[in-house]
Image (tube, rainbow, N blue to C red; front, side, top):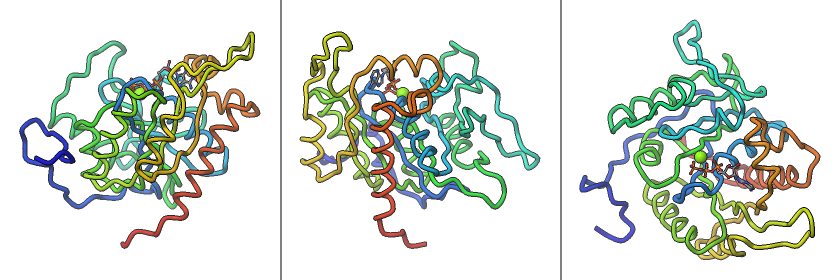
Length: 283
Ligand SMILES: Nc1ncnc2c1ncn2[C@@H]1O[C@H](COP(=O)(O)OP(=O)(O)OP(=O)(O)O)[C@@H](O)[C@H]1O
Ligand SMILES: [Mg+2]
């Protein structure tokens, strides 16, 4: 096995079957990180609302089957209902269609599904959710991935056409090692990487205004250069981001005129430009 080959627990390297488009979705953007807790779900929600604020039609899919956090970050908890055709209608969260396993299970229930069950749930999420009304299309579906380079990432890469992945990282060396693992996985799975977002990048004390680089500095830029990937932006460590997440309303929505919201909006615009500059795939 070469260094580039992901370990698949002694199984054969995974085959790449024909990938399918998600119905009524133009662009699927996967938000990923090999390391946990770097802020993927917070980036996913804020980026989704930033894209919406830029005038795009956006949906959000929480693919963290084992630890869904988007319902909490958006303050919603409701069982999705079927439409007349038997397809799943996503829950609307602040006017954004959202699907999460968190809606289907009771709070605190452990989700210890293995291969086939996991595959079935993802199949349903990818192919049985009715993201838009008839004749309509989402411009972007943001998929919030769990941490790591495991079954969910591989199933997504096998099952659906993904426009590209964004890798979220914190700036310190420990996290960058995981970024490299993530880059390798997406390269092997033939999912383009659209760029890197550095999160928790510096903390400015609200009392004395002094900046402290709690997780070091410049790491994401370094790894972006190493792989020739764009650095989409850097988001500081800021209590307001955490507070808004806990309150169930992402910062971009709660404080749309703030400097922090402008940072997310600039990242969203960079993403839109990168997607627009890519060649259209062959049908
Ligand atoms: N830039 C930031 N400033 C302050 N707090 C942040 C920032 N980004 C994320 N957080 C907080 O860090 C915590 C972890 O964030 P989040 O759940 O988004 O990480 P994650 O990468 O999705 O985690 P997991 O790997 O478990 O899915 C949350 O409490 C969130 O509010
Ligand atoms: Mg998460």
